[in-house]
Image 1 (cartoon, rainbow, N blue to C red):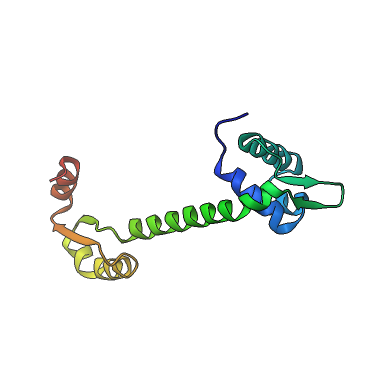
Image 2: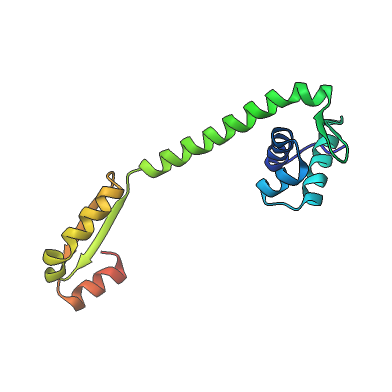
Length: 144
């Protein structure tokens, strides 16, 4: 008996029962049918019980599978919601963008670029530096 299992094992368990078919679940998860079968078998070994009754034409939950199904569904839903929340937080963090350019580009070109960037990332802060080309190149290399 394995002591652990993977998140995809949980998703596979749900997909097989939701779709009622190993073939359809494998297609949805982008797995081969034998790989999905091995994954379900491994999950059953980790749990220590058969969760799905299989015949050539029928897939059904066992009693333990029926009891485990709402727990697995809640776990998967909560995990996916948490990942989405973390992704949202990551998109809102404040970043500093430092731009060094020649005065002509700063005047004519950068306002459009900054406006477009700021629409996508409103929490960003910009620091501008203008100088002659050679001096600006040196400042970038030395990060000053």
